[in-house]
View: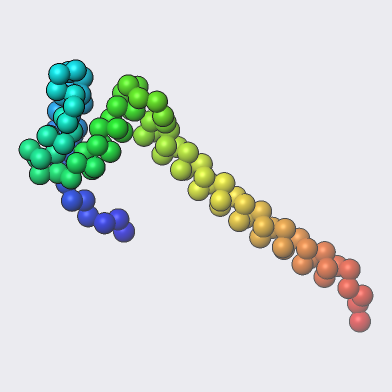
Length: 105
């Protein structure tokens, strides 16, 4: 079970939107994240992470989007499961081959 979230989704979306808009203005870009984090009583690094993710999802920053990251994680879980199943099948086939090679009594 995941840990409860410290900040609500509404607060997260509002603060992120304000920070992204503030960063677009060259005059207010410096310290925008810290200033908005203080206004909403949010840890600045948490807001910085949300802004980074929002900018990446919007195509303003390089890197994989949230959807791509989720898809990669899903595929990695699937590969892990398939490798485990493959190892089980290999062990079973080796066991059965050894049973067939044994002489009958």
